[in-house]
Length: 361
Image (cartoon, rainbow, N blue to C red; front, top):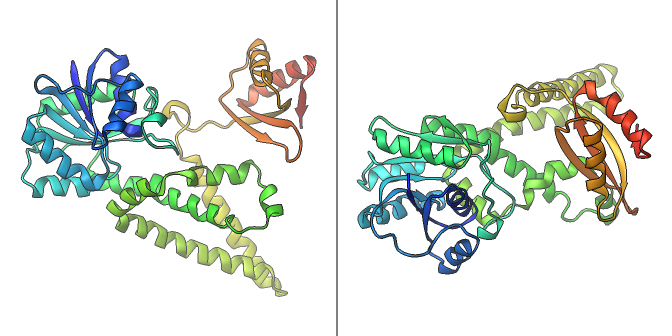
């Protein structure tokens, strides 16, 4: 692959263009908003010039509802020899492409499982797809050259290809992406009119749950509209679980010992189901989940403290698997949560204590 056209220079399109340009691919950028394309070009994602002839691959990076229309225009112009898209829903766009009578032999659906709360070219990163799954949805009429071009795109972006049926993909992303987005938004919405005192009590737990609630509603409306039925099915099942959980909680308030026991069992059951589900989420680099323990270190809120802590951890010879930072309310202190393997806890704790760090129990 030598040349690629990226049509749509939002977060995903520009990130792909940055990754490809960094690998020496000549990238041509297009967008309905010329300013967005120029912004992406200024970041080093490619050129806004017209390609001199058909490129090797065109990446259609537009919302699901626009994939068919944009692909039709690209094929009419003879923009590329092969085409793919990066829309987060696959069945609807594929059905539209077929209904429009487009060339389906040289088109393959795709969806990189990566993103950020921010949108637009300025939020793009060349490493956005590193180590992330990138779903491809070929059909029986997908040309081998097209499949190979898409696989090369995935490799150049540092992602891992996953081949799926379009409908199976849509069910999967509804479960692991679309429904969780709405749940995060619903949880964050409870804070909109909450008392200021209550909000000030927010810690890392509520930050984790509501992080993706900062996402762009307009972008998500496009995604959810294209997968609404499947997402609604999942939320309907969840609604049943919520009803049962509410009933169990109400039972815990009663004076009836048998009802309280049933309530306790109901809450414990849903928590244990959550344990089992969370344990199935892949661990580092897609490996089986690994149990880590947390070492909490208090640091001052001034420049250089975090870097100094990481240097001390490196001197201790310990690999940190994950990091989270919580800030103490009303104090200029941060609590850094270092996730490490259980066998490394004593070594790290001892080393940091010896070097004067405030390690919390």
